[in-house]
Image: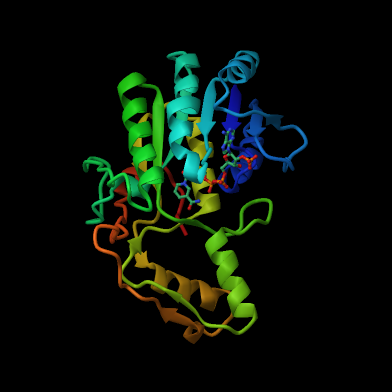
Length: 275
Ligand SMILES: NC(=O)c1ccc[n+]([C@@H]2O[C@H](COP(=O)([O-])OP(=O)(O)OC[C@H]3O[C@@H](n4cnc5c(N)ncnc54)[C@H](OP(=O)(O)O)[C@@H]3O)[C@@H](O)[C@H]2O)c1
């Protein structure tokens, strides 16, 4: 089986790239964009460039594709160009594993199940680029192909397989080590998921015929404030250093409040005990 991980240089992609190599009989390739490459055997590729994408894809000809790319302010291009290039190359036999986000539920009235309708943010909203590109990508995938798994995740945390922490925990650890307090909001509710739990689910999906949309995580939700206090204790610091952040917001620019995810569906197809 040939597996290709687009975004193998990233936080999630790097964990998955290592894990996927443990699959018996799997030939795993991966791509990166910016130097340095974390692994010697990754291919440098801009997924938005049609000629090089096509050349790489035809050479690789994978049975399973994992799309783990993300590009903040250019997220729309990843959907409008990269993802479209990919979909035009997929055969009906090729399985696409797409990592999506709880931010497809921009109304923030969770917890959400897989069947709940997605929504977009106004174009001038701070998070519209990412959220709306994810909604567009999901709609595109579900309307164009049938051999796909969309895995929706809330904030991903923890040390990945190459020792990299998520930016949020990294910032927390930095503050704590210098004894300085740090504030997080208590009104933003999420389903946090450990990076290696997500990577394990993707590994299982590479080897499975299951298709559809799945929410990832334990099903427990917490606020950023509550979660970060817990992380602080786990890191061995005094949780009093974590304070409640301001909840004052600009009207019409509010961050979606509760994007937590119901995760019963994924538990029917995995034995993994989410952290
Ligand atoms: N992190 C989270 O909390 C979170 C939550 C929910 C969902 N997700 C989803 O999980 C997936 C992985 O996220 P992540 O946290 O691992 O992101 P990440 O660390 O930023 O990794 C994304 C990777 O995409 C690659 N990339 C960006 N633009 C590219 C382009 N034009 N062509 C080729 N590669 C390109 C980058 O490669 P280089 O490093 O080589 O530049 C980077 O390694 C994304 O789909 C994201 O939306 C993440």
